[in-house]
Image 1 (spheres, rainbow, N blue to C red):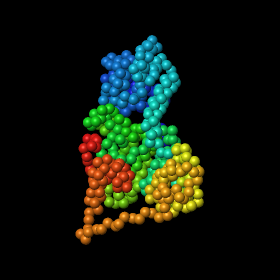
Image 2: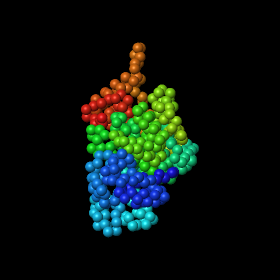
Image 3: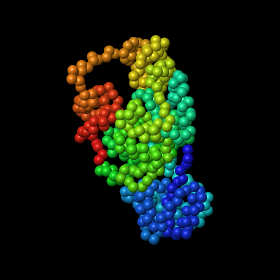
Image 4: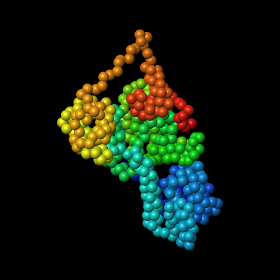
Length: 469
């Protein structure tokens, strides 16, 4: 993984000193821009991305304290208020530097300091900023963290996937994960991240089908500047920024609109993007993993997915097989989930008897690992015995055979329009559920994500839904 040079803005009106310091910092691996006035500095901060700002206190127009106040207050619409700032001062002006730190500066260095000391302090501020941003993101992720902790199973299919993870993890190649809903594509993506040199940086995931409005999706991907649209009250960092240095998983990639596909292709090709409503270019340094439960090759043939984007994301494809293709893993998986939920709910269940395992292995598990996991959670909640038997498995809804299929739909002689039928069913379910998408999805027996993708496909709208314009 190549490490991007930190981009620094040096605000200093003494050009001779600024150029000497800039050359020294360039030798130490920084990229350094110089702004000789406070006004120019604010203009640069509003149009370009910087990892760090170093500012002198005494300036001819806008002094360093005022620059810090404007940036940290969020009053400047186009400037990231989270950018770390360091005060540059003389040995006789330390009291002012302390005042600047109270106003939001991260540290100060004196102009008389030697190069090694300056570099150490600047790198420390950068590291503190990186950790702060990661901690903010990780706190948001804790509530959504998956209870999967490892890839469980010893079948040939799982062994192959583990080998593929080991082969690709050290590279920065773009990966395409394919497989049915519930097979564990996110788990594989997390395993790739954990095995890579990026493991100590964020793992960020975005479900492209969960956001039916394109502007909202683009805002989540790329972020937005304050005022970019009606509800953009403040600057927001997108998933590409949050994943900086780490891994970004784009799930249900096939649900991207043609416009969003084009924007994603440009980011992957150039490693650059801009926030919505912004002019400055931000650099991308993250591993991109895409996932889908549809046949992207067929989508390309049908004109629903860009061929050039398909080739860009299909550098290293990994197919995650459905559970019915690796039934030998079912006993191991079921026991793993049962122990996990028994501990969570303080139940005694620790194992299955032979007949219970036979029933589990005989079932086809159309919902794959996710369905098995949810079923084991139900078992753990209902049992009060150390061994789960076949009676409890049947009582929880898993018998010898699948439930009888509903009566077949009668197709009229003149035929019917399948797309219109789907749209009518989705609309009817939404109306019955009071336009609550989650409840409507339950009525149709599909996931909320699939319901969102259908809403997006048919461009359905309701006054109760918040839409970004």
